[in-house]
Image 1 (cartoon, rainbow, N blue to C red):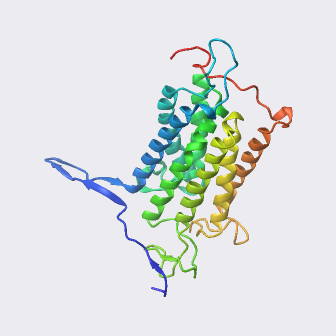
Image 2: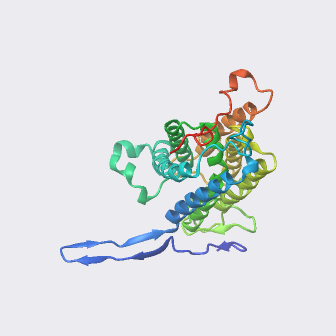
Image 3: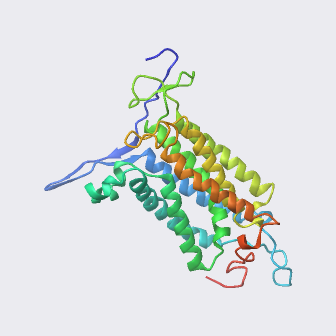
Length: 312
């Protein structure tokens, strides 16, 4: 081991397992609970809790038009029951989109060589960008079905997403995967599958930037500058913040061996997929301005069913 390199803390990727069970002619198991699966569950559950907490904070939302019936009420984008149902849609969007995104963006050969491998989520391979597309599609369909304003629902989702990013990148670190380039930095770490040279713990860089820092930025935007009053602004801040953070970390992260650099020994697939997020985020931030051009404005701020007096 090189001098001053930090040894990788060998944490078993499996939190616990039980089995196998011998049932005579057949045997079942073993069944394992992995840190990676727990990270997805934790991110979704904390996101669900945080979205409900945001809904209960009245000062974050614009007031309804003043009349006798709506006096003192606020125009939230959804009800608690909506959020309880939405989390199921988001879970499916993350899993399906994340897996399909990985196959399409990083391992397209699976489609022709082993089509059934597309569904082998337990073998690893999930893409954040694919998961993001899955979440966007799920949120659009959910909002359309419930007659909710998609941008306002999306703002709520964006504010809670850093929880999942933090836990997901921490799980990547526990698994000893997606490590960074070789480094002489004093915090360089020798990973079990990364050879004998110390490498950047790029998973922790991403957990810090995409999870902690991005959450703080969005928290300041929602609670200090009341970004929920401008539909799409929180989504724009999230997309731009994530895209910039991911592109920066890609300079320290080792590209996938089967893809490598796309051009110039610098540009990676992660950079290419993150650039559209920065651009879309910039457009949404621009749209949220008071002086935004009319062609960027998608319509007035709408109320949800509860505000309109409808019941579920």
